[in-house]
Length: 70
Image (cartoon, rainbow, N blue to C red; front, side, top):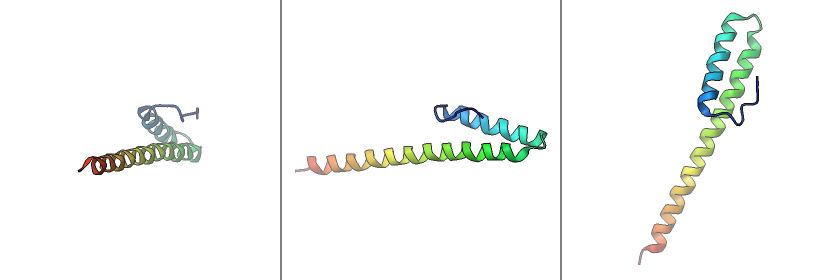
């Protein structure tokens, strides 16, 4: 499996689909399932990062709104 840390999320989803297909066709399916777990973890990390960013922006927006109020 190539380095997917810099891949787009669409590429990660495609790699999951590809690995799932390969797991169905090969005897060494455990390796493909391990790849899928790693790819899912990368997607989860991106989701968590996005959620943190949105919460931070939301909190900053609220803080700025409170500071502007008379």
